[in-house]
Amino acid sequence: MSTGKRSIVRNERTGHIVGEDIEDATGLWGSFKGLMFRKSIPDGYGLVFRPARGIHTNFMRFPIDLIYFDKANRVTKVRPAMKPWRWDFTNAAGVIEMNPGSAARTDVQPGDLLRFEEEA
Image (tube, rainbow, N blue to C red; front, side, top):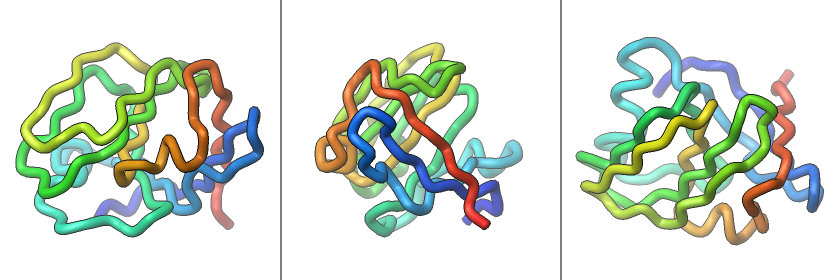
């Protein structure tokens, strides 16, 4: 697992916590590996890639939700339950990869503002 900065991410519109353990992918290896080869991830966990020019789910064992955001942390796109062996090309400032259903469960919509609160 990466050792990147960890945050709690809150949706400003709803007040819901999108994830309580959101980790930044760090370094070349952390950014390349991402969630590949993991059997699962805990609910509330997410991995952030900055920038997000293209996301793939090659070698993944489960689908993931993708929450894209711009430089102001405003959600630009939500792609729910992207299956393994798929590609999604974009030019976002960042993306959070989470368990499928995470975005719907926390009512994340395009236009929402995400607040990243660093863990102590």
